[in-house]
Image (cartoon, helix red, strand yellow):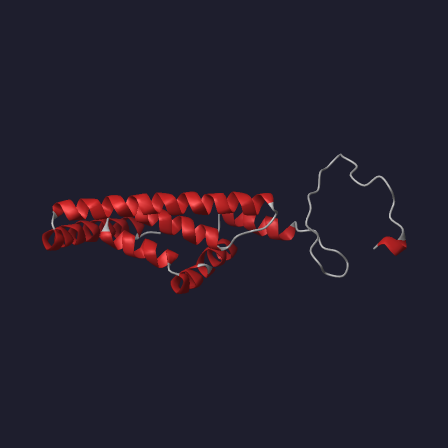
Length: 154
């Protein structure tokens, strides 16, 4: 974390240098069109991934690829050639599969409120005695199942 500001400054300098070099190759107008097209593509990707996340949440499922897709879309929205390349890497299926492992690993081992919430969510899953996960929701203070279960029901 100590070198994060330095890495961010180096990233910005590299992006500016790459923009100047690409502009000299293809022209400033073509570069502007390219940057606008990547921003539009990034916005479309973020919208599509967000809608997929909402549908998955409504169905009670988790989508591992959503975080990588949204990161790819946000990197495409940022102006710059290096961020566009990294954004496309997040969307390209072989590299996206590799990158999907990073958020879960960071959440499991990282500190802070997000990783604590992730670990707490994993601990609060409801399990049946046979080890199968029971999808559902626990509402404290409300009786959901009023009829007692018979041993033959389970």
